[in-house]
Amino acid sequence: MLESWIFPPQIVAAWGRSSSSGGSWGDDGLLYITGHDEKELYVLRRPKSGFTLDYVTTVDVPFEGQSWAWDRSVPGERVIYGISRARQEVIVARIPTLPPELLR
Image (cartoon, rainbow, N blue to C red; front, top):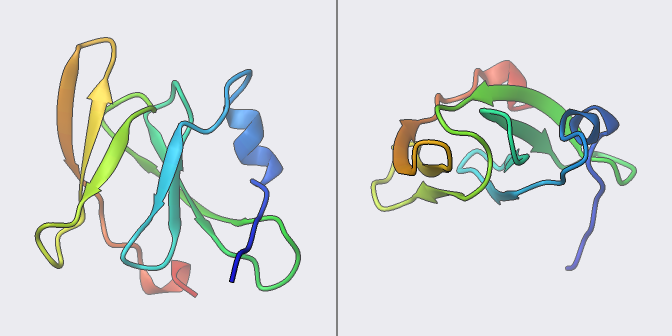
């Protein structure tokens, strides 16, 4: 089944004049997305009704937006790789498991 949603207004506002730089579904069923400039992953959930994704939380990451991916090679590990344009580096980061109350 094909579905489509829109981003919450507060997330779009956080991007300023840019847009989402990409995203991917986590092993917890939530959507993790970045903008272009902030060192943040925005965590979203599919809405129970309507078409606007529900904001869950923001996770700090050690790279500024753009170009990141989950490393799904080790089950149970929540590792991502991101690119720092400013430092011209690939950075490895662990993403914490979210508390159960945020997963509902």
